[in-house]
Image (tube, rainbow, N blue to C red):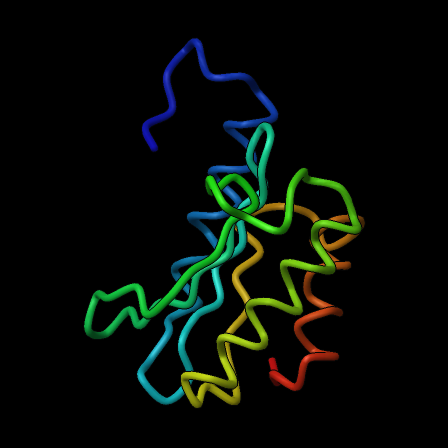
Length: 122
C-alpha cells in the first residue's frame, strides 16, 4: 500500500511495521507464511508460499456463508481453529507467523494461540 498525506498516522505506522517485518519473514513450501490481517469489520488469514508466489489457502470472517462472523476475540479463536484445521488437511505442520504490523495482543494473540492449540507450530 502506498502511503500518502491522507493516510492516517496509525495506519501509516502499521504499514511501515509490516513492510519492515516482511523483509525478514519469507514463507517456503516446507514452512509457509501464515499472514493475518485485521480489517475494519473482518479478520483475514491466509497461508502463503512466497517462493512460488502462491496463496495456498485462506479464510475470512466476511464470506457470504461464513460460520464465523465479526472481529472480536471469539471470532479470532474460531478463525484460528479453522485455519489450523485447514493446515492439517493440507499437511502443513509448521508456519511462519506474519502479524501484519499489528501488536501481538488482543485479537492477534487470541488467533495465534488458537492456531497453536490446533497443532500448528510457529
